[in-house]
Image 1: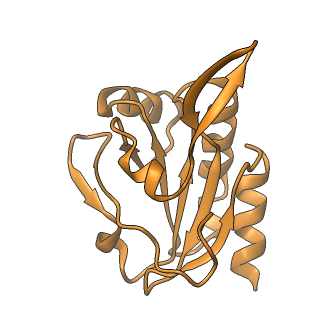
Image 2: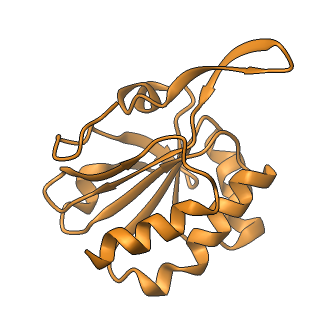
Length: 150
């Protein structure tokens, strides 16, 4: 697990519009990076829409969602729900692995590799302020708001 105060691993992925986005692009802002398993599924939709709904309460904090979905699927997800923030395609799981959220999971007795829903608040200097592993979809925005109040 990543530790609070540690340097956040680099991010450089294609967004929903096919443009390369890096964490360095947001060096003057706090950034919430959240990892979700699959676009347009119930939990991921709830999490993303709840984050969309608090955007006016978080000032200049940037929201970045990351999943293994390709850019085209991320774009469809963004447009369908009017998310309005950056969604990144980590199709090769490199960033998920660097954030320690690419894990062995199991469902109905079948094991597979997938995203452990997690979120990280990163400061303007690229340091991890908060790390929430195994976060519930509905707790992500609440955790963010509480962390920003400190």
